[in-house]
Image 1 (cartoon, helix red, strand yellow):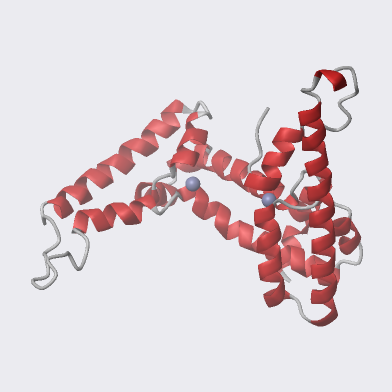
Image 2 (image 1 turned 90 degrees about the horizontal axis):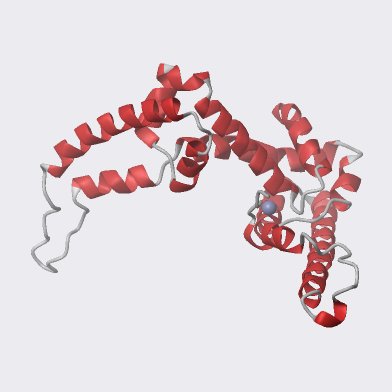
Length: 240
Ligand SMILES: [Zn+2]
Ligand SMILES: [Zn+2]
């Protein structure tokens, strides 16, 4: 099975102790995609053609800039802007979309606006991550069925963020059936709600610690309650 290639990253994510192993997988994919983009690959014609065409979303542009490979980023932006200037000039020259006579509203967008909407919806890094992410999710279901140790690992992880709980819930009915599906949903619900309640209590104690009456009490597990609560609610891993 193709999924077997991906059991190592999936196991690593479930072993990571992250408040959401799926967020941990996504972060790993993002780090790899950023490294790949800024590594020697930016000199390869195939990749350059893709980055020229797709560009990068605002979030990933920020991460690329933080990599400090200023020459690599400049080279990518140069050929990307060469291409957009050339293509957009041609489309801009075509002018606005013609108005339909009856409603006085454009039936279609201006060609240049259509081009920009398409460009804004693509990102070389998002695209690279999404392809792998779907395989990782499939691997979770594959391991649930085939790997005898995995269900226990799944049940004892720190739960999931709300977004990925929903994603696993949704995909499970396509990927599993019968007893496998029932036991998966049961485990997913337990691990999600138990751990949401745990983090909810950590946040509650974090708030109490601002009260002078608890000033000298121990922090317990609440010192990092905010970044962990942010993973649960916003599927975002905050770097310290
Ligand atoms: Zn998540
Ligand atoms: Zn992106």
